[in-house]
Length: 451
DNA sequence: CGGCTTTGACCTGCGC
DNA sequence: GCGCAGGTCAAAGCCG
Image 1 (cartoon, helix red, strand yellow):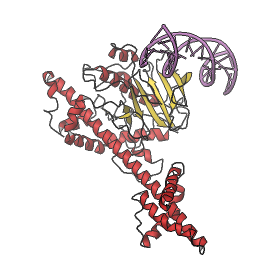
Image 2: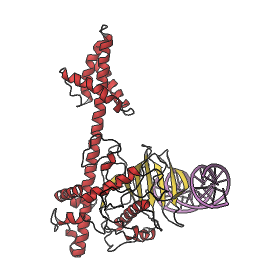
Image 3: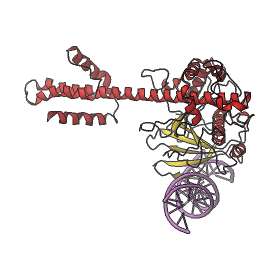
Image 4: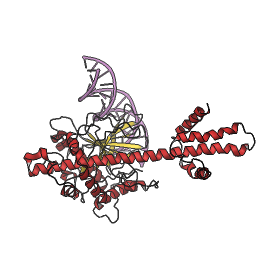
């Protein structure tokens, strides 16, 4: 009879920890916990809360012992607190590991998809009649991987579909990884869509060209949504926006605001800004269209990235490969079922390939990759074919992790995110921050100010 | 006074 | 065809 009561207490405490700040208590009580271990108890409390129930049992002796009350009363409290701390710690660790696992999986699948696409394209160029045998003739882990990592005029997108949907903590949409390792600022008009199979040359990234790409699908426009943590009402992206509407979206108590680019007359770019229903600090900006005017440096980075992503999305969805599908995911943040959408996630704070100890919040994003969220559908056929190419993908992964350009890209993106002022959107003077010592910073990295 | 935000009305696409 | 929801328009008000 005692046991259920104790377990109930523990459960309640565990629930409470969701809303409390664990940092306040950890150091203070950890000493008690070490003391318990030193006294010969089975102090392996980090295994599970179930262990905690056995501890609490001794505490119930207080009910029958009146003497030494003040001393004995503190014991169960301390143990409870210790268990709480352990719960918090284990939960955090579990969450962190899960996040790392997710990101690793995403990166893995993304690289597979990248590789397949590039190899298919190369194969198509070299020997168009053998497209179907694309993977077989490419030496594993050699030229394909490294050539792919070389800075080239073409863009490099890493794409994956995330099939994980059972985790409530995760975003509703799956992830695409976007990375850019070119060294120069490529104006959006010069972007090349590497995934459109019929596209052999630079594709203008104006909205009209996007429409051309999907001319068989009228009214279909690609969108790129950007997620970032920010307390500011809007993500600063270097452009000037005018609000022209606001709506309450279904399923989200936060209104969705509609903005139009006002940097030039007739600029077709629009953007929607909405906060996440679950996490009010999460700001989601969805961009549509391409600017028809020169952009300040601060805006150029994002514009080129979103433009390329949008073009990729459209061409990928209409090409014969078709590994990019519309994004019909019913997210509360971006219910954009009618439009193919890619989401750039700037909320990831943990480098999947580098375990960071409880770092200072400002230091966490220093290892933050750019994540693109894409469609949650099942892996495309090409991707399934590539599932056997694990060794090659590992090589590519290693190339990425050791590529200084990639690291510089991350540093540039993070610096721009951390260093930008919240209202830098209107201030074109505040361009993307440049990390010293990385002259080839790809400015296609985002330049959001996330407060 | 010009530019911006707010907000209700209207339009359009989509699912049933 | 109807209802719903997303998206846009435009008048009114606010602000520097």
